[in-house]
Image 1 (cartoon, helix red, strand yellow):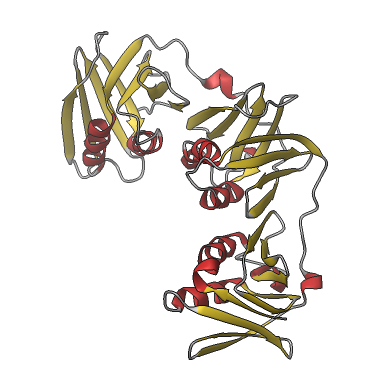
Image 2 (cartoon, rainbow, N blue to C red):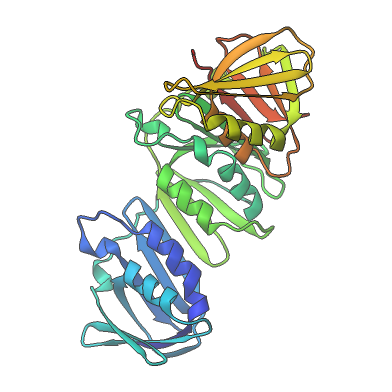
Length: 370
């Protein structure tokens, strides 16, 4: 096995594949990348038995084909360390991978590619096509709201729902909920299907996708979730379990509507958060006609207070929130959103936040008792 490849060709694939491979592994080979070189080019595969990414790149020159596995992080670090514009010579000799570039020479341990485990693909249930940009958007709008190591294991991921003419993603950690939709133009699903995709798979898929119009193929299998781009195949197992009925927790009766500038609110919340309680992050919002006042206190008897003009004509209302949750919404609702709308009803009910005039994403944030 011997080939030549440009450093820039490998840089991004190796960086993303290093995130896919197992960090804590019981099988040594799971810290490796599988490398296959043939006339079609170079195929790189990383897996942790739950998530698998296959990436195809072009070679500068193929001298002899072959297949082997090498340590993922070490190969990635070597590639990063080389100077821009470098050409890498890769050769398998005496069961060792020899990587050469300029005056640098590295010899890496290998394991047989025949031992590399792959994810078994299940029967395809539904397949649709949509622009990469749209799939990336429905992930990025919600990514922050997924639970982390919650005992309710079905919350430790993102819920994808395919319906007639629409792809929806939902994430919640029990204290907040985010939802994003995108319309399917090119292909319509024949039947409704849904799946919970693990958080790690969602994070790695977001790194893989680009903000471009090029279409990707989205596949819902009986036990797997798959995304095919022009140069890669991403596969994830699903989380078994029943996702909560998210529609029930979306408050639809908020009669107190606040409309304000997203960036101005974001900056004010950021300043107020400096003196919020470090553990609970609670702040108090006081609404009156045309004005929103925000205050924070902490156990050191310190206080922050600021107000801003808003479009609000309802009754006065005082309500508490986790300031971090509100900042997350302002950061992820979309840079193109200039004005946000917050719908409230009473101090004990959740807030519904979305772009003023409606949009493709909405957020539910539970109140806090202060």
